[in-house]
Amino acid sequence: MADVKEKDDTDSNEQSGQLELITGRQTAAILMLLFNDEEAAQILERLEPDEVEALGEAMFSVANVDETQIDGSLDRFLVLTMNKSMLSYKSDEKVSRVFRRALGTSRAETIMNRFAPKRPSNIAEKLKWMPAKDLALLMTEEPPQVSAVLMSFLTPEIAAVILELLPPEMQSDLIYRVATLGPVSAKALAHINGLLENTTPLEEEVAPPMQVGGVLDSATIINNLPKERGRSLLKELMKRDKITAKLIEDELFVFGDLMNLSKKDIGSVVRKVDSSILVPALRGASSELKAKIFGAMSKRAAETIQDDMAEAPPQPMDAVVAAQKAVIAVAKAMLDSGEINMAGAGADYV
Image 1: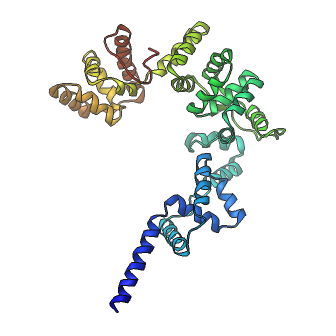
Image 2 (image 1 turned 45 degrees about the horizontal axis):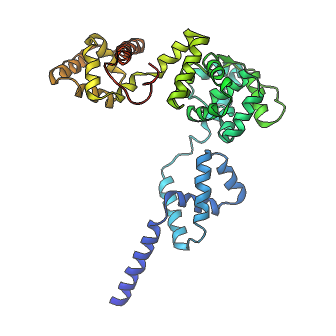
Image 3 (image 1 turned 120 degrees about the vertical axis):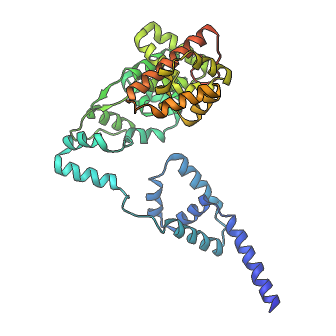
């Protein structure tokens, strides 16, 4: 009997060890291989490009799993999904259909824009799957305004990569156009969708224009470029339109960038800022930045600011933003004069 028990324990330990080798990604891969082709394809359609790649790699890695590991993966899946509700599945589509039917497309879109979560654009979805070189080639062939709209739908990181693949004379023009974009009509967006699908655009439903681009978009793209190239682009923009270039420059150095200051330098900045400005400015700061700023102050000064923040009434967001810009102005002046130094985002553009 003892031998039998010992054998059972050994088998159990071996099975446990085998199950521990199966990761969550491999569990998903096993499930995908158990689905029929159509079901598996429908799941893949809902994933992001990096998720598709990771899952595909995992599907090859589980080719030799045994029955015990398959059973363990199914058990894990059941545990994870036991308390999940299906109510949220495609709920956004349901809400959209109901509102469109009740109010008509145009009024439904106008109302839903006030409360609905931002929905990813079909254009952004298509662009995610296109290689950077293909996108760069497309932008060289299309009118500049179309290229600017395409650029505005990309993530800043990818937009910066593509920008560097374009001819130098195009780069500053595209950054400027992205910054000055505004409402884009549904008809124009339909044309761009057709361009990406290489099809003739269908007649679009009546819908309000979509706001795209802006100085913040241009600034985030520049912040993802090599610093020397970013500085050069900003100088080119200054020659073209000082007002727009200044707006972009203001977005290159944001309140959160104070984290890149040393403890000594951040202390130098806050000593030049009146508490009436610092208190509302810190309302919108991250806990990490608050901790760093308080750590750069004397204990007494930090406690005073904290007490003032606790006692102050709620501040409108405009007041918080204005106070943060005032702090940034002090920091930028000190950077320009060489009193402080900054490593990181925004350092080369002030």
